[in-house]
Amino acid sequence: MYNEIDLDKIDISSEPPTEEPARQYYFMAKCREWVREFEKKNGRLPCFFTQTFGCQMNARDSEKLTGILEEIGYITANSEEADFVIYNTCTVRENANNKVWGRLGYLNTYKKQHPHMKIALCGCMMQEPEVIDKLKKSYRFVDLIFGTHNIYKFAELLFLCFSQEGTVIDIWKDTDKIVEELPIERKYSFKSGVNIMFGCNNFCSYCIVPYVRGRERSRKPEDIIREIEKLAADGVVEVMLLGQNVNSYGKNLENPMSFAQLLTKIEQVQGIQRIRFMTSHPKDLSDELIEVMGRSNKICKHLHLPLQSGSSRILKEMNRHYDKEQYLSLVEKIRRAVPDIALTTDIIVGFPGETEEDFEETMDVVKQVGYDSAFTFIYSKRTGTPAAMMEDQVPETVVKERFDRLLKEVQRKATERAQAFTGSVEKVLVEEINEQDETLVTGRLSNNFVVHFPGTSEMIGKIVSVKLKECKGFYFYGELESSV
Ligand code: 5AD
Ligand code: SF4
Image 1 (cartoon, rainbow, N blue to C red):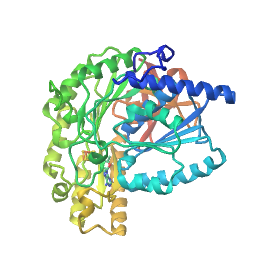
Image 2 (cartoon, helix red, strand yellow):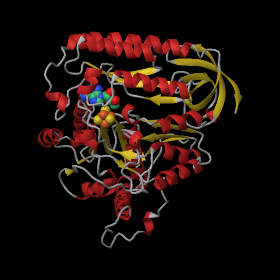
Image 3 (cartoon, rainbow, N blue to C red):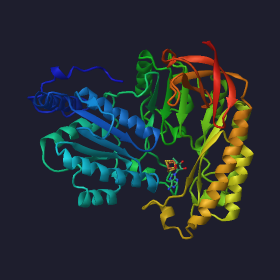
Image 4 (cartoon, helix red, strand yellow):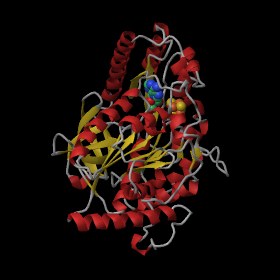
């Protein structure tokens, strides 16, 4: 979402501008020249492949990378057998890193047969100094490395990468900068993520995010609204507001504004029919927000409220700033204000020092709340976080056994809750043709349940009424009642 700028009108013989985003458009124009030369030489346009690891924030960042690559003339490839491959990495748990190291091995083999190809890495994992050391030492075939704070500079870095030998590495420790109005290529025509803030100030003791994403920075409300208005004009009906902790939105703005106030403004944007947001920290969830959710007919009936642990002792060790009782009373308050709301959560099993009693507390919260779904994670030690230094790391076999028990309980409760919807007629936003069966489409309810039902591609992006006929645990089969 940006004001279309004609790159051909930019004078690339002069010095690059110093201000943003003009500087990046200048480098996009420079890169486009390079692309044209490639086309002349090879009789085809160069192609690119992006792979995103991790969260929705990264997915949105990848849309920015794609927007820039397409702006300069690259076309998409369906696999890593491409002229330019970029991995947007995640480092929240060790297995996210391992995936990247594994894929790089494969890329190296491919590059040996296609030496002209360029390989780039960006995202959270690149903010870790040990990762950069390892790349410099053993992965010298990587051409471009940058981090989370300077993604807006992608065009400039790409140009550097085209014009010099050796690896281009640009990692910033932190930033207070937010650059607006750069190209973005959306994955879906009818829904879009919208960043409302970047970074995190919470320093939960197990989490690496504050170290790799930097301090909290909120986008100005007028920039957010302008982006959403443009999205709506472009056919978007659902927005997902993104931030590590959306409930502390606006605290550091020149004119402070609460998240609830921002939501009220976004609700007024014509054409937007559904508003989602992610993620909410329980410690910052205000009564004002609950009230706004209760009376809104655009804000989806879904709240993702990470629990992490049900043990007050462990929550304290995690630096979460709430205890079991406070979490449970918050849930009660939300359910009272929004009775049909779906609640989902994140839970970590095996945090250092977690005893059987602590784990039972988590199980107890899961039983009491009855989540509609939950992401359950095995604790992963992240170098540099306080928890990594804690003694009493829980043995793997114990963690695995607890994890399995938790998963079973989560699934049992979630199925029970979903079953209750069988037979009801619900509004569904149709998202895509079903991957397994082309005669079906897949859509989502306001509460985030997924339903598959007979339909055609013309329905994609529309909100329709669907009867939920059969519950399959965490999804439904349904039948179209009527178009809305
Ligand atoms: N180990 C396991 N899970 C983690 N998360 C964050 N850090 C870790 C870690 N070190 C989980 C939390 C968070 C989600 C995005 O990832 O549950 O809410
Ligand atoms: Fe990590 Fe806690 Fe920040 Fe979430 S709120 S990103 S878990 S530090």
